[in-house]
Every structure is written in structure tokens, then in C-alpha cells.
Picture 1 (cartoon, one colour):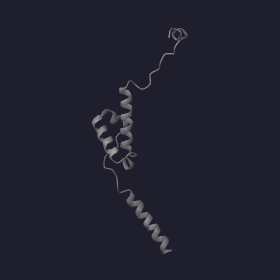
Picture 2 (spheres, helix red, strand yellow):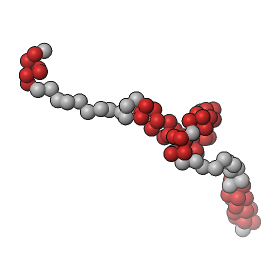
Picture 3 (cartoon, rainbow, N blue to C red):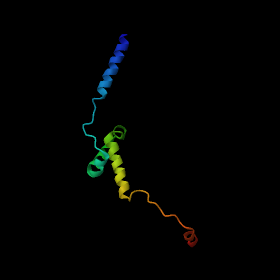
Picture 4 (cartoon, one colour):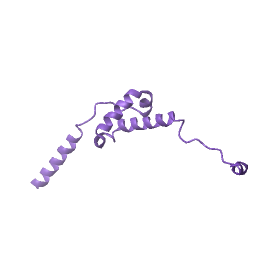
Length: 93
């Protein structure tokens, strides 16, 4: 009985203490990171310093998504449709 009580108390202490390490930075949206390039780059640099611990945090995810969206947007919006070749065009080649 004492052992069960001690294990339960230890588990409760671990659960309480696990919530103590919180990041003080407010969570920013993907749109916010799209509009603030300097902050986006700083956050991505911070995320890449310790990817195992930080890459799954909301700010790292949002900064990465914003960076991906702005990069694809700068390149012309990704994949562009191509007009199909006609039989006449194939014969010319």
C-alpha cells in the first residue's frame, strides 16, 4: 500500500512539474510570420538550433509554414499548368 501511494505521489509530482517549463513567447499565426520576415527568420534559426526540442512547437511550425508559403509564392506560385501539345506541334519537331 505504501509503495502504491509513493508511486502515485511521484507520478503526480512529475505531472505537475512537467507543465512548469513553458515558453514565454506568445504563439504567432502563420499569417503573422508571413508579414514579419525578420521575426520569421529569427524563429526558424532558433528552431534549427535545437530541432528535436523546438521543431514541434506552434511557433516553429507556423514559421516554417509561412516560410514555405512565401518561398513558393516568390517563385511564381508553384507548379504552373502547361498547355498540351497538339499533333501538328509534334510533327514539327
